[in-house]
Length: 331
Image 1: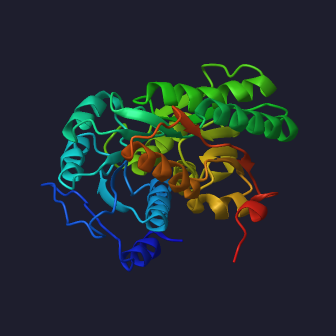
Image 2 (image 1 turned 30 degrees about the vertical axis):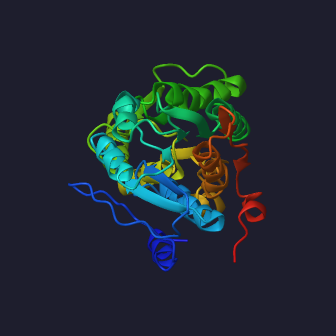
């Protein structure tokens, strides 16, 4: 489903409530019965295909559970976190699902909505978080690295010129587990990746448009390494990041130099690449369409004063051209 199609479909739902903050935060009146539970959701940035799929899954689950979902999109901007916190607080939610990507500002964001009991997704958001819902980041990294290593061993004899990795250093622990875990898993198969061959980029470096940051830095990497003809790519934060690398390489006339790419996500935007691009080794499934069924019930439990586990983690597996039609059948 495209972002526009999903958004149009959901606008037709009777319980739709959007509190999409703009320069001056706004809250639209909640729809639903007098006794209907209100849960707030701070999105990390719906311009990301992965995040948008998670947002859609929360909307579907909210309708299924009869919960009013109040939303605010940070648009991947750190200053928007506090704005969103104030926006959602005006709707008097009973619990919050908080997914903003900047841990340094998490205390201020929590304070902005009164430190309500919080489900945090994929990113630490202390001190208000009561449970973490999302990826088992280190396990996913090892799974991804092993799969890329096995492919490189079979197809390249583990010989390569550059190991190119997209990173998110602002999320210190998550980055170490996803990007570092992928490298570690690869090394378990192919041996140590020399520092001289490992090139990491910060997808937040250069502005709020992460995909443009990746495209620009990929172009720079290719320019700086004109003799690199066998390049491996790790995209541990989304399929969209991997697509940005391939697009940049194709535009630079270096697409054939990308030999193998392993992403994390397996979100809808990557399915055609998994099925049809020979360079795409696979994607570790994070199953964004399942997040709603994990996070929303946990938020409802918190709102009711019930106990929840400290962590609710996704089970990961590699999605590749051999199994994608079983996991995501085409219509």
